[in-house]
Amino acid sequence: MDSIPWDVILAIFGVVVPIVAALYEFVLVGRKRLGYRIQMDTTATDTVHSEHAGALHQLRQGNGTLLVDPSFVLLRIENSGAINIDSNDYAVLDDDKVGIRVNFPGRTVAGAVVTELSDDFLRPSFAEGLGLGVRDGVIELPKVPLNRAAHYKVLAALEAIPEDGGRRRREGEAFEAPRIVGGIKGGVGSGGIQETKSRTGTPIQAVSLVCFLVLVIIAQFIVSVSGTESAVDCAKGELTLIGSTAFRPVLDDAVGEYRTTCPDADFTIETESSGKGAIRLNKVGEDDYEGPDLLAFSDGTVSDTNPMLVPRPIAFSLFTLVANKEAGVANLSMEQITRLFNGEIANWNDPSVGGSDRPVHLVDREGGSGTRGVFEERVLGGGGTATDNSEDCKTYTHEGTKGVIRCRRGSTEDVLNAVEDTPGAIGYSEIGLAKAHEKDLTLVSIGNQQASLEAADQGVYPFWETEYAYTYGKVSADSLTASFLRYLTNEVGKDIVRDHGHHPCDELEKPVVCRPVEEPTPTPSP
Image 1 (cartoon, rainbow, N blue to C red):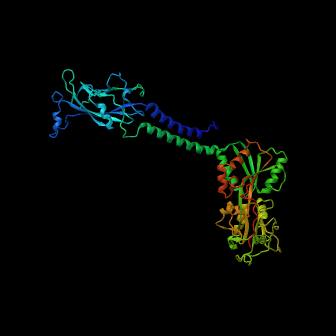
Image 2 (cartoon, helix red, strand yellow):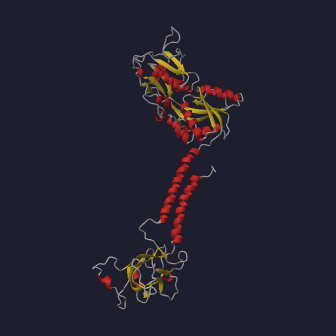
Image 3 (cartoon, rainbow, N blue to C red):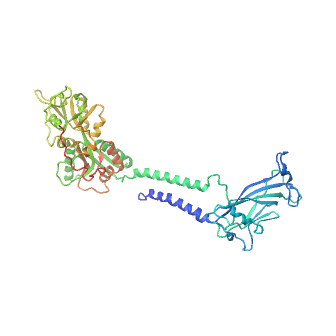
């Protein structure tokens, strides 16, 4: 059932049903139809007696006899179909000039006139000898040709016939409805003349069709919403996510959303660093590990050259320098950053920097960190950083130590907290987590360029990298690992990636290698 394309089926219904309804109404049902309407059937006697009744008190029959219980009927005959009606279409014998007969049970016809023609060219159809006549309680109407929507009206004056025993109609007692006899060849149903309704209101067919289309739209909306949820090809099993701490916020949200839709999936997140994740994945693969599947995330490619580690680009990630607000800096050139992390600048008020009078404190990541690797490769030009000399990032671990205080932290969140708590400190982070601390930290521009996809795309912002997911060898298509990887690259997963400041790889110019453009060569700012 999951493979049934309900959205397509509903769309087809939404198109086919109105077409079928139109064909049924205008081609089949409405192909040829003769209709009538009783627009008035009322007595001519006054319920409230008035001296202004005038001629209504003097209605007479053809022989001069006053009408005792008169009434008036206004009858409309019309072509209510989609095809013209010709005189030879009437279902009568060829030598019969009468096309329609109107019988008034309990009444005789005192007189009748044609009062309205939709088109003046209908007038000759009512000429003497062509079928128009009155006989006792019957009005005879000729075989009038009627184009689409054409009509004419007949006004009749009638006299009530006393019932057996001579009893007259009681006041307020209704007359029996007129009986219209006629038909056309090839008309709807049996071809008989049909009573039509006034078109002042909305036809029930139109209301029904509108209601149907509204239901189709609602159903399509429900299918689209449920389709968003069911787009996840749920898998069962256990999966442990390891590696990059910078990508941890994305994984936390993605796992939460995946579990909501696929409750039979069990995840464990044990991120330490990109390097440690790759080492662990490689080891369990070589040891023929039989525990939960592992999926390792890395900021950039891992240094381990084991061909069994298979990378898959997931996102394009931006990184930024972060500084304690008391450092008094918001922009640094590549040269200044290199000198700072080489320990050549000890105070922010150094003339080459121009910050506050605060000692410089450097907060680094542990060895094996993918974020640190990106920083050393893309910002420091491949150079490493010196060893740490502090545990609390504020004082030297050993007395007598000289130089800039430098400490290391095991995760991106720990780096941000240390920079925030240490006056004069500077460190680095992926952009999403850094922006969450923007109120208490300064996101430092590099060469007057803030971290942005546009700046990286133009090759003027150097601090970025591709986020990879690594598996040990190929994974089964129906495994939880494969399903979660697909989830990270579908619409829901991409929304989560964007929410944390990363960019889905397939939205970039070079999605296969997840680069914004050809490998940029940053130009150091003077």
